[in-house]
Length: 199
Image (cartoon, rainbow, N blue to C red):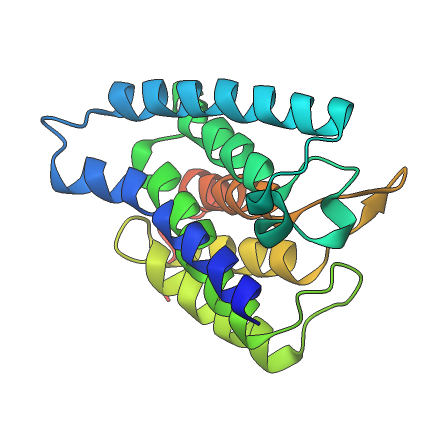
């Protein structure tokens, strides 16, 4: 349980990236966020390449990775990959920082809450009440940034990503990657196609 709490606390630290931008957009511009995530992405790719090819086994890996991550990219690396994709997706038509920020917060805040309440086993679907909490948290995180319909779609997508972790060719599609990516995509759909729907 102590290792699980440690993992969740590390998770929450990721909220510092979007929150720093929100609190000081004049100083922490979106370009700064993208630059920081580029550096972080390079670092985690190097660390994971070394870990997976040489068998490097630092104590931090024992504490912060799960059994199914021993031979696969670890959750912390997929976390950075997922939020980096969202951060750079703002270059696409219709994708904005107001979609990227809540998508990042869904991962940094919603996922650890859900993880502490529910199963951490990648092969299990979480209990219905845990998924409802995840949906509520993620929808509330999105609500200040996007219209209600988009916030709900984002909450649904993030909850789906959190609750179901499929295996493709033996690899677990970790929710650290899928929560921000699917959450952002769903909110983009809501903003683009359902902007006038008030709920």
